[in-house]
Length: 316
Image (cartoon, rainbow, N blue to C red; front, top):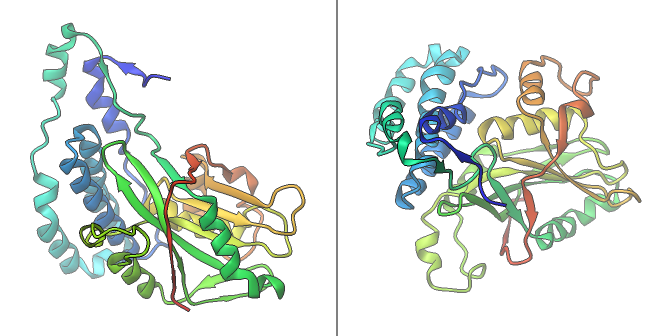
Protein backbone atom coordinates (compact mmCIF):
# COMPACT_ATOMS: atom_id res chain seq x y z
CA UNK A 1 0.00 0.00 0.00
CA UNK A 2 1.54 3.38 -0.95
CA UNK A 3 2.46 5.87 1.75
CA UNK A 4 -0.18 8.52 2.45
CA UNK A 5 0.25 11.66 0.38
CA UNK A 6 0.15 15.04 2.06
CA UNK A 7 0.21 18.57 0.61
CA UNK A 8 3.66 20.13 0.79
CA UNK A 9 2.30 22.93 2.97
CA UNK A 10 1.29 20.37 5.59
CA UNK A 11 4.65 18.58 5.69
CA UNK A 12 6.43 20.61 8.38
CA UNK A 13 3.35 20.63 10.60
CA UNK A 14 3.01 16.86 10.18
CA UNK A 15 6.65 16.26 11.07
CA UNK A 16 6.39 18.53 14.11
CA UNK A 17 3.41 16.49 15.29
CA UNK A 18 5.72 13.46 15.47
CA UNK A 19 7.79 15.19 18.17
CA UNK A 20 5.36 16.22 20.93
CA UNK A 21 6.68 17.56 24.24
CA UNK A 22 6.92 14.71 26.74
CA UNK A 23 5.84 15.31 30.35
CA UNK A 24 8.65 14.54 32.77
CA UNK A 25 8.31 11.32 34.77
CA UNK A 26 10.05 11.84 38.10
CA UNK A 27 10.25 8.08 38.74
CA UNK A 28 12.55 7.67 35.72
CA UNK A 29 16.16 8.39 36.57
CA UNK A 30 17.97 11.36 35.11
CA UNK A 31 20.54 8.93 33.69
CA UNK A 32 17.79 7.23 31.68
CA UNK A 33 16.70 10.56 30.20
CA UNK A 34 20.26 11.46 29.18
CA UNK A 35 20.61 7.97 27.71
CA UNK A 36 17.45 8.63 25.68
CA UNK A 37 18.94 11.91 24.44
CA UNK A 38 22.11 10.11 23.38
CA UNK A 39 20.02 7.60 21.44
CA UNK A 40 18.12 10.36 19.65
CA UNK A 41 21.39 11.98 18.68
CA UNK A 42 22.71 8.66 17.36
CA UNK A 43 19.54 8.17 15.30
CA UNK A 44 19.83 11.71 13.93
CA UNK A 45 23.40 11.00 12.87
CA UNK A 46 22.29 7.82 11.08
CA UNK A 47 19.47 9.61 9.27
CA UNK A 48 21.82 12.42 8.23
CA UNK A 49 24.26 9.89 6.73
CA UNK A 50 21.36 8.27 4.83
CA UNK A 51 20.09 11.66 3.59
CA UNK A 52 16.71 10.93 5.19
CA UNK A 53 15.89 14.58 5.92
CA UNK A 54 12.34 14.03 7.15
CA UNK A 55 13.35 11.59 9.90
CA UNK A 56 16.45 13.66 10.66
CA UNK A 57 14.22 16.66 11.30
CA UNK A 58 11.94 14.63 13.60
CA UNK A 59 14.89 13.24 15.61
CA UNK A 60 16.43 16.69 16.08
CA UNK A 61 13.14 18.24 17.21
CA UNK A 62 12.60 15.33 19.63
CA UNK A 63 16.14 15.76 20.94
CA UNK A 64 15.79 19.50 21.52
CA UNK A 65 12.37 19.06 23.15
CA UNK A 66 13.64 16.27 25.43
CA UNK A 67 16.71 18.16 26.62
CA UNK A 68 15.21 21.66 26.88
CA UNK A 69 11.59 20.99 27.84
CA UNK A 70 11.55 17.60 29.60
CA UNK A 71 14.90 16.90 31.26
CA UNK A 72 15.16 20.46 32.55
CA UNK A 73 11.99 19.87 34.64
CA UNK A 74 13.33 16.73 36.33
CA UNK A 75 13.66 17.18 40.10
CA UNK A 76 17.29 16.06 40.01
CA UNK A 77 18.19 18.27 37.08
CA UNK A 78 17.88 21.37 39.27
CA UNK A 79 20.46 19.91 41.63
CA UNK A 80 22.79 19.00 38.76
CA UNK A 81 22.27 22.04 36.56
CA UNK A 82 25.99 22.19 35.83
CA UNK A 83 25.79 18.68 34.34
CA UNK A 84 22.79 19.76 32.23
CA UNK A 85 24.63 22.81 30.93
CA UNK A 86 27.65 20.63 30.16
CA UNK A 87 25.43 18.22 28.21
CA UNK A 88 23.92 21.07 26.19
CA UNK A 89 27.35 22.44 25.28
CA UNK A 90 28.79 19.01 24.47
CA UNK A 91 25.90 18.04 22.22
CA UNK A 92 24.89 21.35 20.76
CA UNK A 93 26.59 20.68 17.43
CA UNK A 94 24.06 17.99 16.52
CA UNK A 95 21.07 20.07 17.54
CA UNK A 96 22.03 23.13 15.52
CA UNK A 97 23.39 21.37 12.43
CA UNK A 98 21.56 22.58 9.32
CA UNK A 99 18.59 20.63 8.01
CA UNK A 100 17.45 21.36 4.47
CA UNK A 101 13.79 20.55 5.10
CA UNK A 102 11.64 23.40 3.71
CA UNK A 103 10.16 25.95 6.07
CA UNK A 104 6.40 26.43 6.30
CA UNK A 105 6.63 29.51 4.07
CA UNK A 106 8.74 27.71 1.48
CA UNK A 107 6.41 24.72 1.55
CA UNK A 108 3.38 26.93 1.03
CA UNK A 109 5.06 28.66 -1.90
CA UNK A 110 5.79 25.28 -3.46
CA UNK A 111 2.25 23.95 -2.97
CA UNK A 112 1.43 24.58 -6.62
CA UNK A 113 3.93 21.90 -7.55
CA UNK A 114 1.57 19.26 -6.14
CA UNK A 115 1.51 17.00 -3.08
CA UNK A 116 4.65 15.54 -1.53
CA UNK A 117 4.69 11.85 -0.77
CA UNK A 118 6.09 10.99 2.66
CA UNK A 119 8.67 8.24 2.28
CA UNK A 120 7.47 6.34 5.34
CA UNK A 121 4.88 6.50 8.10
CA UNK A 122 6.69 8.34 10.87
CA UNK A 123 4.54 7.74 13.93
CA UNK A 124 5.88 4.24 14.69
CA UNK A 125 8.82 2.63 12.95
CA UNK A 126 8.88 -1.10 12.14
CA UNK A 127 10.80 -3.53 14.35
CA UNK A 128 12.05 -6.87 13.01
CA UNK A 129 12.93 -9.84 15.24
CA UNK A 130 13.59 -13.54 14.64
CA UNK A 131 11.77 -16.41 16.33
CA UNK A 132 15.22 -17.96 16.81
CA UNK A 133 16.14 -15.18 19.25
CA UNK A 134 13.06 -15.86 21.37
CA UNK A 135 13.80 -19.59 21.36
CA UNK A 136 17.37 -18.87 22.43
CA UNK A 137 16.04 -16.84 25.34
CA UNK A 138 13.90 -19.80 26.45
CA UNK A 139 17.06 -21.92 26.37
CA UNK A 140 18.92 -19.50 28.62
CA UNK A 141 15.89 -19.28 30.94
CA UNK A 142 15.26 -23.05 31.05
CA UNK A 143 16.81 -23.67 34.46
CA UNK A 144 14.67 -20.98 36.11
CA UNK A 145 11.59 -22.04 34.14
CA UNK A 146 11.84 -25.60 35.48
CA UNK A 147 11.82 -24.15 39.01
CA UNK A 148 8.91 -21.82 38.27
CA UNK A 149 11.06 -18.67 38.50
CA UNK A 150 10.83 -15.79 36.03
CA UNK A 151 13.79 -14.77 33.85
CA UNK A 152 14.43 -11.64 31.79
CA UNK A 153 16.57 -10.41 28.94
CA UNK A 154 17.23 -7.05 27.26
CA UNK A 155 16.55 -6.57 23.55
CA UNK A 156 18.87 -4.32 21.56
CA UNK A 157 19.43 -3.72 17.89
CA UNK A 158 20.27 -1.41 15.07
CA UNK A 159 18.53 1.20 12.98
CA UNK A 160 18.45 0.98 9.20
CA UNK A 161 18.17 4.68 8.40
CA UNK A 162 17.49 4.16 4.70
CA UNK A 163 14.12 2.50 5.32
CA UNK A 164 13.67 3.65 8.94
CA UNK A 165 13.51 0.14 10.36
CA UNK A 166 14.85 -1.35 13.58
CA UNK A 167 16.16 -4.91 13.75
CA UNK A 168 16.66 -6.63 17.10
CA UNK A 169 20.14 -8.14 16.74
CA UNK A 170 21.20 -8.72 20.34
CA UNK A 171 19.78 -10.49 23.38
CA UNK A 172 21.52 -9.43 26.59
CA UNK A 173 20.95 -11.72 29.57
CA UNK A 174 21.75 -9.58 32.63
CA UNK A 175 22.44 -10.51 36.21
CA UNK A 176 19.01 -10.84 37.77
CA UNK A 177 16.91 -12.05 40.64
CA UNK A 178 13.48 -13.64 40.17
CA UNK A 179 10.49 -15.15 41.91
CA UNK A 180 7.42 -16.98 40.66
CA UNK A 181 5.80 -13.71 39.54
CA UNK A 182 8.55 -11.07 39.37
CA UNK A 183 12.02 -10.60 37.91
CA UNK A 184 14.47 -7.77 38.50
CA UNK A 185 17.48 -6.87 36.41
CA UNK A 186 20.71 -6.17 38.29
CA UNK A 187 23.78 -4.28 37.08
CA UNK A 188 22.11 -1.79 34.75
CA UNK A 189 25.39 0.00 34.01
CA UNK A 190 26.90 -3.31 32.87
CA UNK A 191 24.03 -3.71 30.39
CA UNK A 192 24.58 -0.19 29.05
CA UNK A 193 28.27 -0.96 28.55
CA UNK A 194 27.35 -4.11 26.64
CA UNK A 195 25.08 -2.05 24.39
CA UNK A 196 27.86 0.45 23.74
CA UNK A 197 30.77 -1.91 23.14
CA UNK A 198 29.26 -5.13 21.81
CA UNK A 199 31.64 -6.76 19.32
CA UNK A 200 31.22 -10.22 17.83
CA UNK A 201 32.62 -11.71 14.65
CA UNK A 202 30.42 -14.81 14.57
CA UNK A 203 27.12 -12.91 14.19
CA UNK A 204 27.90 -11.48 10.77
CA UNK A 205 30.54 -13.94 9.69
CA UNK A 206 32.21 -11.16 7.71
CA UNK A 207 35.18 -8.88 8.24
CA UNK A 208 32.94 -5.84 7.82
CA UNK A 209 31.81 -6.42 11.42
CA UNK A 210 34.76 -4.31 12.55
CA UNK A 211 33.11 -1.23 11.05
CA UNK A 212 29.68 -2.25 12.39
CA UNK A 213 30.98 -2.68 15.94
CA UNK A 214 31.59 1.04 16.28
CA UNK A 215 27.84 1.72 16.08
CA UNK A 216 26.01 1.88 19.37
CA UNK A 217 23.16 -0.56 19.87
CA UNK A 218 19.68 0.82 20.43
CA UNK A 219 17.73 -0.62 23.40
CA UNK A 220 14.48 -1.91 21.90
CA UNK A 221 12.72 -3.39 24.92
CA UNK A 222 12.81 -6.52 27.01
CA UNK A 223 11.71 -10.14 27.14
CA UNK A 224 10.72 -12.22 30.14
CA UNK A 225 9.07 -15.50 31.07
CA UNK A 226 5.84 -16.33 32.85
CA UNK A 227 6.74 -19.93 33.75
CA UNK A 228 3.55 -20.61 35.72
CA UNK A 229 1.19 -17.88 34.49
CA UNK A 230 -0.65 -16.91 31.33
CA UNK A 231 0.63 -14.52 28.66
CA UNK A 232 -0.07 -10.96 29.80
CA UNK A 233 1.61 -7.90 31.34
CA UNK A 234 1.24 -7.51 35.09
CA UNK A 235 1.12 -4.04 36.62
CA UNK A 236 4.80 -4.44 37.55
CA UNK A 237 5.61 -5.43 33.94
CA UNK A 238 3.65 -2.41 32.70
CA UNK A 239 5.77 -0.06 34.80
CA UNK A 240 8.94 -1.75 33.52
CA UNK A 241 7.76 -1.27 29.93
CA UNK A 242 7.03 2.37 30.68
CA UNK A 243 10.73 2.97 31.28
CA UNK A 244 11.72 1.43 27.95
CA UNK A 245 8.94 3.09 25.97
CA UNK A 246 9.70 6.50 27.47
CA UNK A 247 13.20 6.18 26.02
CA UNK A 248 12.04 4.83 22.66
CA UNK A 249 8.40 4.61 21.59
CA UNK A 250 9.02 1.54 19.41
CA UNK A 251 10.26 -0.50 22.41
CA UNK A 252 8.48 -3.80 23.01
CA UNK A 253 7.72 -6.13 25.91
CA UNK A 254 7.80 -9.83 24.97
CA UNK A 255 6.24 -12.39 27.31
CA UNK A 256 7.05 -16.08 26.91
CA UNK A 257 4.47 -18.24 28.72
CA UNK A 258 5.37 -21.91 28.04
CA UNK A 259 2.50 -23.32 30.14
CA UNK A 260 -0.23 -21.16 28.57
CA UNK A 261 -2.08 -23.46 26.16
CA UNK A 262 -3.79 -20.56 24.34
CA UNK A 263 -0.97 -18.04 23.90
CA UNK A 264 2.65 -18.97 24.55
CA UNK A 265 4.12 -15.69 23.31
CA UNK A 266 2.91 -12.10 23.26
CA UNK A 267 4.62 -8.95 21.97
CA UNK A 268 3.13 -5.92 23.73
CA UNK A 269 3.49 -2.15 24.08
CA UNK A 270 1.70 0.53 26.09
CA UNK A 271 -1.02 2.31 24.15
CA UNK A 272 -0.11 5.85 23.13
CA UNK A 273 -0.71 8.36 24.25
CA UNK A 274 -3.31 7.18 26.83
CA UNK A 275 -1.62 4.10 28.30
CA UNK A 276 1.89 5.53 28.43
CA UNK A 277 0.75 8.80 30.00
CA UNK A 278 -1.38 6.94 32.57
CA UNK A 279 1.58 4.82 33.71
CA UNK A 280 3.92 7.81 33.76
CA UNK A 281 1.53 9.53 36.18
CA UNK A 282 0.92 6.41 38.30
CA UNK A 283 2.55 6.61 41.75
CA UNK A 284 1.79 3.02 42.78
CA UNK A 285 4.56 0.42 42.99
CA UNK A 286 4.28 -3.35 43.21
CA UNK A 287 1.11 -5.09 42.05
CA UNK A 288 -1.93 -2.81 41.77
CA UNK A 289 -5.18 -2.59 39.82
CA UNK A 290 -4.88 0.82 38.15
CA UNK A 291 -2.36 -0.39 35.54
CA UNK A 292 -4.13 -3.22 33.73
CA UNK A 293 -4.89 -4.66 30.30
CA UNK A 294 -6.52 -1.40 29.20
CA UNK A 295 -3.13 0.32 29.25
CA UNK A 296 -1.36 -1.98 26.77
CA UNK A 297 -1.93 -3.68 23.42
CA UNK A 298 -0.46 -6.23 21.04
CA UNK A 299 2.17 -4.68 18.78
CA UNK A 300 1.25 -3.94 15.18
CA UNK A 301 4.71 -2.68 14.19
CA UNK A 302 6.70 -5.86 14.92
CA UNK A 303 7.53 -8.37 12.18
CA UNK A 304 8.96 -11.88 12.58
CA UNK A 305 11.92 -11.98 10.21
CA UNK A 306 13.71 -15.34 9.79
CA UNK A 307 16.62 -13.53 8.14
CA UNK A 308 17.33 -11.34 11.18
CA UNK A 309 20.67 -12.49 12.62
CA UNK A 310 21.29 -12.21 16.34
CA UNK A 311 23.79 -12.84 19.09
CA UNK A 312 23.44 -13.50 22.82
CA UNK A 313 25.49 -11.77 25.53
CA UNK A 314 25.21 -13.54 28.89
CA UNK A 315 26.31 -11.23 31.72
CA UNK A 316 25.34 -13.58 34.56
